[in-house]
Image 1 (tube, helix red, strand yellow):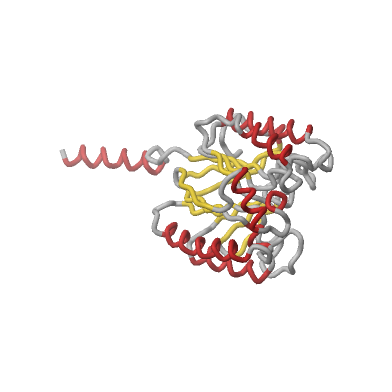
Image 2 (tube, rainbow, N blue to C red):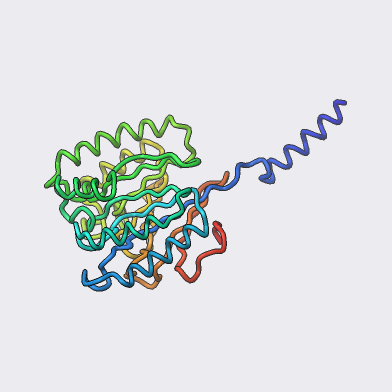
Length: 282
């Protein structure tokens, strides 16, 4: 009997090592910068409609654990036609797929105010919040408030206080992946680079990154640049994903796929014409 039990244990252990005892992979999709109105300088949004319709069809086909849109939903802050078209197509996403939105600088203004933030909250939803999906503890930030809080200082301070508490909760949640989603990357080349259009000013950059380091965050996903970059600050990887809308670099419009397995998180940007048949990283 002892021999049989030993053999059975060896077989079970072999299956576990091979991955048969692991939970199924968890996948999600990231769409950045649909930015309705950008192609035609706010005189229309035919091309954005076509791109976003394609992206939504891909979401429905691939059926991820969730999809998140990484800001700059529209091009002209407060434009009702651009907003309505974005929402019209967004509502075509399969109701069984959780959808998360966050604001970019074009959604709340390059220098957000209490009024522009309130309008975003009324038309789209919360501008910062957390969510749980599979192994993911998602923390969504309004990075434009971090970029330039001058005209909305109370909202900025509220977000920082909230973030500190949320990171404490995340650490004790048991989630295997605490991931931050926002519109702006903290930097584009190195953590001490000078302030510029594509990054968060250094003073607040280090403030937030120090909080993330202390809380076990290893991934930050952003948009804003309309191209793909991936940089590191120690054990934090910061990725700016290419756009659903107008691209600024060689990579065309597309979607980022992320897959979480027992080995960790992998992600890859796919141009529309190169999207996989199923949720996987090739």
